[in-house]
Length: 545
Image (cartoon, rainbow, N blue to C red):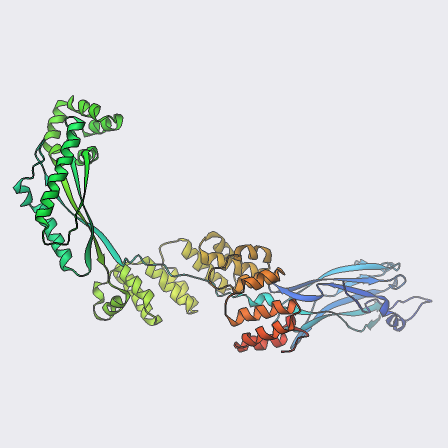
C-alpha cells in the first residue's frame, strides 16, 4: 500500500530531550497508509482506514497527541472529532502509544457533501504538553472522492397495467335437431323450428357483417344412453349423416363451410349435466350411480332398477339427448386502434372498460390519457385505470398526485407494491423501497431492487439482480463497473445513451485506454451535465479531453 510521509507525532517534552521543533524535523520517519488510496463515496458516506506508524523513540511518554482527519473540498471542509493518543506516563484515558514504536489504525467516516468529488483527506496534528501546545504541519493522506455509484438511474421503473382488449372476438352460434327415439330421420318440424331458424339467421347476419366471418363448422350427433351401446353408436352415426343433409339444405346461400361431422354415441356427459340441473327426485342417487360405475350397460341397468326415477328420466331428460348439434365458430374483427381513437372523439359512449384502457395506451397526449383513465374510473369503477393514473403521474414526476391516486387502488398486487416502493425510493426511504421491491416479483421491481442495492453499496448482489437487464442496460453496466468486472460491463453496454457512453468512458479510463476515454466522452457530452461532471470526476484524473 502506498505510504505517505507525514508528521503526526507530538513534540517530546523530556527533561534531556529534543524540542517539538526538532521532532518536526523527524517527520519523515513517520509513515501513513490509507485504504482506499482514492476515497470512494458509498451509500452517501466516505469511509476509509488510516494507519500511522510511529518509529522507536518518537512518541514521548509525557505528551498527548490530537489527530484530526479533515476532508478539504471545493467550497469548504469537514472535520472529524479528533483522535487522541497519550504517552506511557500520561495519566488519562486515551489510547497509549509506546515510545518503543507502534502502529495505530483508525476508521474515518464522513457524510458526503456535494463538492467532495474533488477533494483530499489530510491529517492535522496538535501536540499538548502541560500548558504548552504546538500545531504540526498538515499532510495530505488520500485523494477523493469517487462518486461513480451516483450515476445510478434512480427514478424507478413502473409499468402500466395492460388491457384485455381483444382485436378478434371469438364466439359460437348453435342450433339443434332433435330426433325421436331410435330414429335418425329429420322431421320437417325440426327444420322449421326456432332452433334451426335462429341458427340460419345468425349465419346470415355473420355473412352480412364485413367484420365477421365463420372460421369453422361442425355437426355433433348423439344418442340417448338407453339400449345397447352398439345400437346407439350406429344410431348416432346415422343422425350425423342425416343432420349433414339437413345442414346443406338450410344453409344454402350462406358462407357456412362444409362441416366436420362427429358421432359421439351415448351422451352420458349430457345426461349427467341435465340430471344435475333438473328437479328430479333422487337425482343425487342417479349421480352417485354415474360416479360409481363406468360401464354404460351397468349404469343403465342400475338406473332402470329405480323404476320411478327412470320414468321421470324418460320424460324429462332422455328426449333432450336424442339430437344433433349444428355449430358454427365465428370470429369478429374488433375496432382497430385508429377506430378507437376516432370513437373516443365522436362516440366514446360505446367504449367499454377494455376499449378505454386500450385507447389510453394508444394516445400520446398525457392530458388526454388522464381524461380517459378518469372516465374508466367514473363509468366502470376500473381499478386498473386507477392504478394507471397513478403510474401516469409517476412518469411525470408528480409524486404527490401519484401517491394520492395510488392510495385509491383497491388491489394490493405486486404492481402496486412496486409502485409504493418507487415512491419510497424517490423520498430516499431506501429501507422501505428495498422491502417493497423484494416482495414484488415483477420485472420492474427487480430492476428497482438493483437500483437500491447500488445506492446502499450492496454491489455484489446488485450484479446478480441486474445481470439479465430488460430494457435500459445502464444500471447493469454500472453494477459491473462497481464490482470491477470491466470486460463484462463493456459487453453489457449496448444502449445508445449519453450516460452509458459516460460509463464506457469510465471503463476505458480504468483500463488505461486514453483513446477510448476521449471517444466515449465526446458522445457522452451531448448531455451538458455530464460534461460538467467529467471535469471534476476523479475517474478521469490524468486524462485530457
